Image (cartoon, rainbow, N blue to C red; front, top):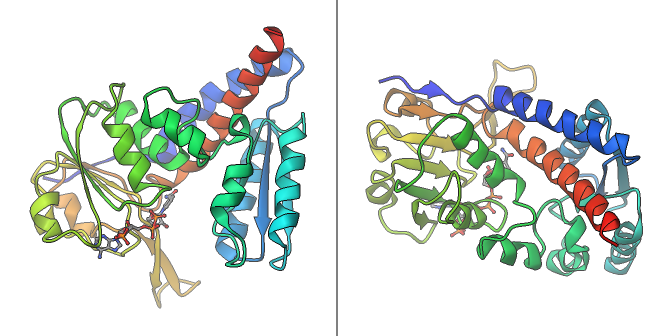
Length: 297
Ligand code: NAP
C-alpha cells in the first residue's frame, strides 16, 4: 500500500478562499481584521514564523502589526505591551511568539491577554472553553490537523486516535479536540509521551496516528498499523550535505511509513501550511465577533 498524500498546501488554499469572502464582507462593514504579533529577542526560527504571519495578513488584505522587542525586555515591559494591544481597537487578535526568553514567565504573559483577542487559544479561559465543548477559538496547529482530516473525508467517529506528545501547544489540545462530540472528532483517544512504556504497542492500535514529538523519523513502519492514517506534525532540521543550507526539514515519521499507511501528511507541505491558515481564520473570527458585539450594544 502507498499512502495517499494529505496536502495541507492545497487544503489551506481552499480555506484561504473562504476567508477572503469573509474578509470582504467585514470590509464592507468598515472593519479590516487586524492581527498583531509580538516577537521578543532574535531567535531565527521565530523571526521566520513572524515574517510568514505578516506576509499572509498582507496577502489576505488584513491589517498586521509586527512588534519586535529586544531579548532584554522585562516582564513588566512585555505586560505593558500586552495591555496596550488588549485596548487597541484596530487589533482583533494578537499573539506573543513563543518561546520567550528564560527570564519572562510565559504563562503570566499568556494570562494577561484579553481572551477575546487570544487567537493562539493559549489563554486558560479559551483552553477551558475548548475542553467543555464550547470553543471561541481552537488552537491553530490542532485545528489545522482536524481540518485536514475533515476536508480529506477521513472518518474520525468511533476511530481510535493515538496522539504522540502531550505539549500544551499540540498534543494535549489535539487529544481534547478529538474526543469532543463534534465534527471531525468523536474518537477514542490515547495519548503517549516520553514516560510511556512500549510506545509501539500503542501506536500500532491507532486508526489515526497524530505525531507531535520533535524527534526526526521516530515513528517507523513497525509502529504503524497497515492502512492507518498518519498525521506528522513534527518539524526537524537534520544535516544534509546535498542541500544549500546544509540541513533539510523532516517530520517525526519515517518516510517508509507511507508504504503502510493509507493516507499521510508530507513534511513539508502537510500540517505546516495549516497552522498559519488557522491563525488567520481565528483572527477573522475575532473581527466578526467584535462586530457582532458592537451591533448588540
Ligand atoms: P514539545 O513541547 O517539545 O513536546 C514534545 C512531546 O513529545 C512531549 O510531550 C514529549 O514527552 C514527547 N516526546 C519527546 N520525545 C519522546 C520520545 N522519545 N518518546 C515519546 N514521547 C516523546 O513539542 P511541541 O511543541 O508539541 O512540538 C512537537 C513537534 O511539532 C516539533 O517538531 C515542533 O517543531 C512541531 N510543530 C509543528 C507545527 C507546525 O505548524 N507544523 C506547530 C507546532 C509544533 P514529555 O511530555 O514526556 O516530555
